[in-house]
Structures are given as C-alpha cells and as structure tokens.
Image 1 (cartoon, rainbow, N blue to C red):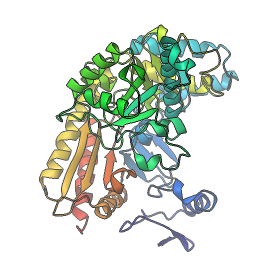
Image 2: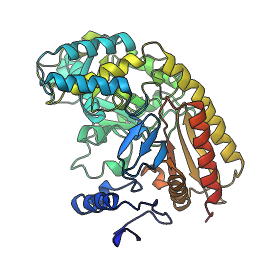
Image 3: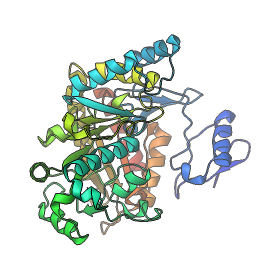
Amino acid sequence: MTGIDQGLTLTVPSGGALPSMADGDDAWVIDTLRRHEPATMHTQHPVVWERASGSRVFNREGRSWLDWTSGILTANAGHARPEVVDAITEQARQGLLHAYMFPTRVRARTVRALSELSGFPQSVLYTTGAEAVEGALKIASRYAMARRPERAQGGRRSVVVTFEGSFHGRTLGAQLSGGLPAQRDWAPELDEAFVHVPFPARGEAWSTEIIEAAVRKVGAQPEDVACVMSEIYQGSTLQQIDPEAARELREWCTRHDAILIFDEIQSGFGRTGALFAHEHVGVRPDLLLVAKGLSGSLPISAVLIGDERFAADVRPGELTSTHSGNPVSLAAAEANLALYADGQIVAEAAQRGRQLTDGLADWAARLPRRRRVVGAMGLVAGVACTTLDGTLDPATSKRLAAACIERGLLVCVPSTLGGAMLKIMPPVTTSEDELAEALALFNAAADSVQLG
C-alpha cells in the first residue's frame, strides 16, 4: 500500500510505485473509483487523464506522458484529432444524438466510406468489438443453416472453429469463441459447438487436418463448420499467423463453404503498417471485424461483409442494436476514415514500425538473458522481463511499467501472460522524434529497474 495526499491509500502492483500526484483532485478521483467500482476494474497504474492530444496524455496539473497505449489501440490517428473533434461537435450541434435504426445521412456516408476504403460492399454497425463478433457469428450460423437446412431442422448446431490463445471480447459468445480457457470458466455451459485448435503461428508446422480432427472429435464433419475465426496477430500473445497457413485456411473454408472471419478489432487502421493486417498475408476474409481505430475515439464497430449472399438469410431485426449507428459516433468515424484515404498515415506507420522494432531489438540485445521482445508487428509489440533461466518475471515487468510512468512514458500491463508483458501501442501517427524520445525514456526506465 502506498499513501498519497490526505492519507489516501491505494493498492499498487507488487514492487510498483505510484507516480507523483500532488493534486488532491486526482486523489479524489482514484479514491472514488476505488470505493464505487469493483477492484477488478482497476488494472492499470493510477494516472488520472484530464485530456489527450496527438501522442500525449495530460493530467490536471499539466504533466504529460508520451502514450504507448493509444487508449488500447483506439486512438490510432492520435488523440483528439481536430478533424474528428470538429465532426463530433458539428453533429452534436445539429441536435441529432440518437436515431436507433432509422436512416440518417451520416450513416449513409459512413457505410459508403467504409466500403470505398476497405473494398467490402456491405457492413453492419455496432458499438463494441464484442458486439461485432456476436454479429459475425450470427451471420455465419444463418448462412450455414440456409445451405444445410436438413441439419438445422434436425436441431444440430453448426460448428465454430477458433484458435487457442485468441481473444475476441467479453460477451458470452465472444468468450466461448476465445481460446483462453480461464476467460471461459465462468460460463454456465461450455458449448461443444465451439471448437478450439492450435494457432497456426508463423514458422510452426500446421495443417487444416488439425481442424478436421478436432471437428470430428465433437461428432461433426468438416461440412458442418459454419466459420473459422482468427486474428492476424493474437492480442493476448502477439503471435502472428503464418502466411502459408492463412492461405491454407482460405482454401479450406472455400472448399467447405465455411465463412472465414478475420478479427481485426485490434490490428486494423494502420496498426501493423498496412491498412488492415490481413494484407500482410495476402488473404481476404469473408467477414472482417473492425472497431477501436475505426473512429479513433467514440464507441463504434462494424462487421464488413465481402459478399452480399453471406447475410442474405439473416432474418429482419436479428442484427440490430440500440446504439448501432449512433450519429455522433458515426460522425467521428466518417472524419477518421477520411484521414486514411490517401494512404499517407499507413505509409508513415510502416516506417515508425521499423523504428520501434529496431529500438526494442537493441533494448533486448543489451541484456539478452533478462529481456525479451515477445512479438512485434508494425506499431504493436510486447516486451517482458525474464529470470536467468528464461522464465517470465511478472514482478520485474511491473516495476518496469512503474518506472516508465514515473519518467513520462505511459504503458499498460495486460493480464495475459500472467502480467509479465508490457504491451506497446503508440498512436500510428507518432512522429519519428516522439518515438525516439519514448524509446530513450523506456531504456532509461529499464536501466533503473533492479532485477529480481
């Protein structure tokens, strides 16, 4: 326990330290949240955000941090882009803050912009990534039922294939799809319609025969698979899909008339140095899931549909959601999508990705037995501290996170990998000088941390 201001005590990670916060208002915010929210909500260091701009976050006193979180991969084009702020403000001034499923001009413009940018002719709008996952599963299941009515009439459900280590959200269907057992054990029943197979990581031997064996193990056949859903890089482990395996997946799904879904909720909109990460493997999915960087700010997500026939048999009303297509969120998304139209943001993100990868490689090489780059793809990377025998060392990694924050570099420690990994996710519009400054702060923090 560490005391700050007026005797306030807060729980902090083992070995960590609170950043200096002399402002009583910050202490009030932290204490109030601690009192009125469950402890499970408080997973990051208590830095109270007052505002954010570009690649920096500020507290009420004006202290700033270079941001290596992007609001967890949301503010890809930078915090509070003026174009996005202006669009939100103008939409609010028009007096249309909600419209349910009724047509609006901003909705029409946004879905058209999505199609023009992505090449997918249709989209279904939602508010969160998990909602998009649920919508995609429903589309795939309805498509499977329509092409195999005898199975549906017999009461048998189609099979959903996903991968071990995957993360697709926190709603029931999304977590049953996910490949992290600890995040499914709360569910009242683990549905055998959800089959999890090893992830086809880059450089590892893998074949679609693994899918067929797993499907048969639950009493089904390959023809019973409604969809295969995968991330391009796994948000939990940062493993990347092998390009050859991705192509094999595409061929297998086409052969069995199963829908291939790529979850790019984390990896879309320039994050990996391409507009969408699947461009790196040269495979086009049937359904593409996007969120986070879609608006760069407000809650909005989408299922992008590659062929109109996939959603043709979904019954009216089955894909609706109360806040789907919220006009203010759509205004933010429309303005944000326009930023990507000329490709400049993505091209610069690719350059910054190489700068980040090189910088982290240098960091690890200085102490190779105690430092590890878990994975890196464009402007997302994971780093971890290890013991001398190579075992992940969560305590030291958390001390590193605290040291970064003390020096003005905002990082986060996800719960995956036992809290041993720092996930690095700067805005893709971070400048060369800002990234160099952040890497210098990171190295200084790492050098200051006493190894366990």
